[in-house]
Length: 157
Image (cartoon, rainbow, N blue to C red; front, side):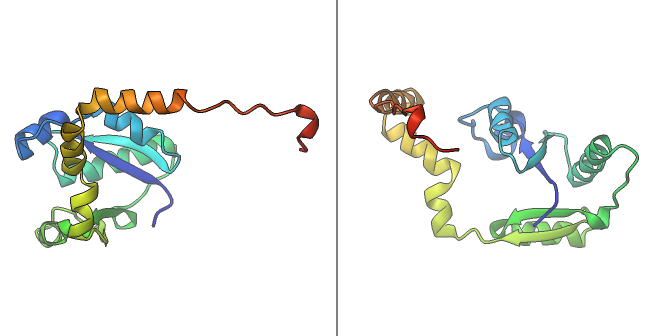
């Protein structure tokens, strides 16, 4: 869908004020997870005071940092959202909040979101003993895996 992917992470403060929820992972952890993805060019922050105009300006600024001497126009940008935000973001577009940025929506069926949302994961963790218990099970599972030994004489390169 794009040549370069810039991802916004909502800060903990924004999430707590807007959604009245405490994130499982803090802002830094979420940003690090996204930076680890090869497809992500840069991770930017959407804090409590941020608005759509700020997001546009942040991407334009970041693009110019990554591409010295080059300029990109708003009309070349695409903001991608799940279809559950379609009504809200189309209204924002009509109100001029997105300027010339193109808006695209990807499928996010409500039934699937019930299974893969952060709320669903948080509920699962609470029901199974919390994050520490989950991480302990993962560590236990990894320690029970037998290491594979490879004879160099059998490997062809």
